[in-house]
Image 1 (cartoon, rainbow, N blue to C red):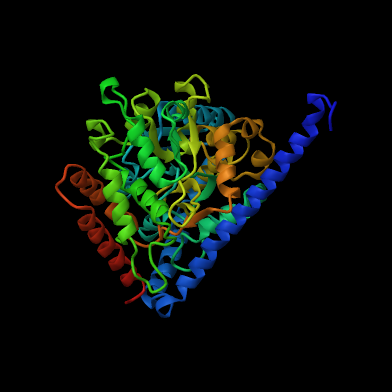
Image 2: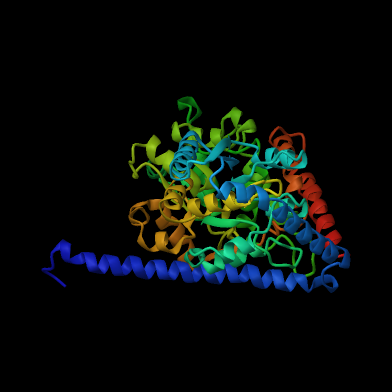
Length: 485
């Protein structure tokens, strides 16, 4: 209505925010329901679960119960006020994230003077380090992960189910039910147990220099336009590259996400159980994308991990990186909060007219089966996954909070552009999610080799077809073994 003051717009803004959040939560629930449906459908494939796996699942559950029971004496001592020491490892942490974790730990210890928590940050190669520690029987009591390889941890009996703790937790209803149910699907033994407590949900996005796009009259709304934009933004004489590629550790994981966004294929396995990794459209993408190395990227990209990737973007050396919302706070700081210089954009439209992202996978916290004080460990987890601690966590990692109170009431959610980006991704009818089958036993074991093979492609020592054929053969073997084919 004309003549209304700007101040009177506030109720309408609040109503819009409330409506948006409701839509986001409904789409989260709908998307996660697809995970549940897919999981139940697959359980019926191949004649159901293997008897050996069912027996092993029962044995695993029994062992976990025994482990918890054995720890009762230790936790009883702790409850009496005796000193307790816990070890906490956190993955993919920057210095800023490390400071956050240490601050939250200090706050918790201030409220629990008998509990000491030793923090170990894992800036890179977290998957390898945690598995090596677990296998040696030296894993941390608590693992804070942005997306845990929970199936490997479950199958290796390295973490304990948290159902009893969760059921008795008075704040359990604060967490999005769809997120909890999604986490339960990582228990592929069929017992539907809860092995970690989720805290936030992330999305893969393009981080782009908005000012460079404007300067070169470029867009990234489609993949073809993106490749053209990378060329347009490259000016080697000025030390400016249109793109930075994650050629080192962790690169294959993001390469997989991008190839499915490019091809528009929505599952790593088709309806007949055939792996789609080496589909011609995926091969085409790898050829085009890794073919940019050295032409529109710096030579150093060959060995870049995510820390170097973010640094290339923040320093003005690269006009685009493909990462997740977790690096948002770094970019805000690097550009002095000037949002005219950068932005987060969803995956470009493919030939099918869709924007495809990785199926939602919440991050969270687990408790090791070797933990002597699981009661105290779980109490710390509840502290970290609700209220102000998880609100701060979500800001540092750039994720959508699972705590519904934070999702509905935190002011920073209204102010931070990357949350708006994630909301837009969820609300856009053209946004679809592909099923990675991350729960498949052995799924992640191939990534290290594919990181290396990606480098061989970049240096011309291997073809995209050769790499993806090898990758597909490995996934097919994992799939066939699981379903007794």
